[in-house]
Length: 300
Ligand code: SF4
Ligand code: SF4
Image: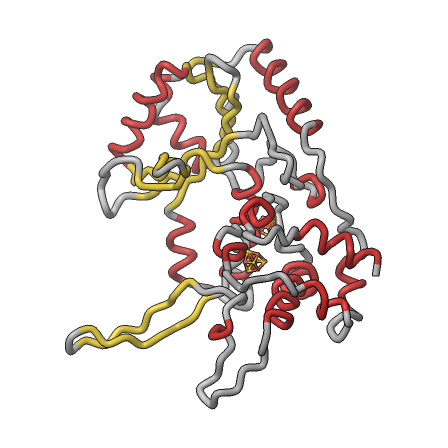
């Protein structure tokens, strides 16, 4: 299916129509923060649409696929949710100064992980269906859309070019895995962790982090086995029932975070588990900047 145009005047109608058939999650402003939330009540059992993801986050879903839906291991809960989710991303026009997606071969208009990609052309959105799932969704809403013209495509191309030129931050990824191969016992980790508070913000904000814990919980007379979102930056993450903790301090935990993203993941999946979204850079309370850590490692 070719690109379509949605007038911004009709965005509300577009979303309202989606809500009839899907649970729609979109960025909603709460206390000054934009959080992905259920847009409005929609059928609980319905398939999901995530509206307004950025291409770097959509790409991170393809990394999570490698972990939770591989030949070796299949996570039925993850797979079911993934299959029932349609991702509508929107290309970035104004990357932040902390963005470094291009270091990982991603651009502000990358398509990987998205079912549909939108481009903000001021008065309109240009809609590019990418997968069959995306095509089906657009087909059902075509009464709201018009065909894109050559002038729209030219505007889109110029926008993408400008957005790519606005990603100013870059990190040296080449050879990083090999460098880290020999650094497990390096004195480098003695220094780099010193200002880390172990708050876990960097991992909870990261679209590729996926550590979890499994617990048995008793509720009234019922027992439940539940999976909890967890963080490798917390001491209890590796605390064993015997009392032994193989990651005793922030040194071992920060090393694990860096090794997991840039060494173990490359060994296991052929990919670094970072998409350069820059969230951990923007939100670390002590400005521990992962870009600086990567640069320092490359200079070791
Ligand atoms: S956000 Fe910063 S201080 Fe908190 S755990 Fe991550 S690196 Fe450490
Ligand atoms: S920049 Fe930070 S938050 Fe974003 S993907 Fe990389 S490690 Fe995760």
